[in-house]
Image (tube, rainbow, N blue to C red; front, top):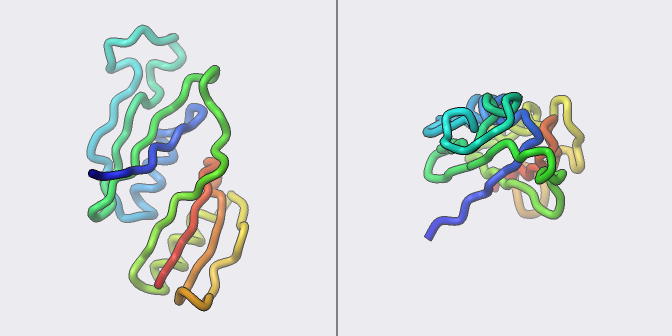
Length: 131
């Protein structure tokens, strides 16, 4: 069994996942807009993402644009990324924090070479942990 985060966005999923693809050295493996699906969709949502899959190493991050009546601001979770080296951890953290909000600056802790927490500019909370 695999358990993967599924992130919802208020209409900017494509922008977010293109950003994550670059920052996390991933690859968008699949993407479908509402307009490409057989679902009846309002005209202004046909270009929005119905489903996207980003492969990052052995893991998968998924997401979609949630229709306005179904969108809720993310709360009560964080997406955790564990880069292998300090430089990569710091670079990922800096990119995710830019335009967002830092909850805990990236720093050495008793459990990790680097750990930091930030909510990115798309409203997604992240934890970067380099053991």
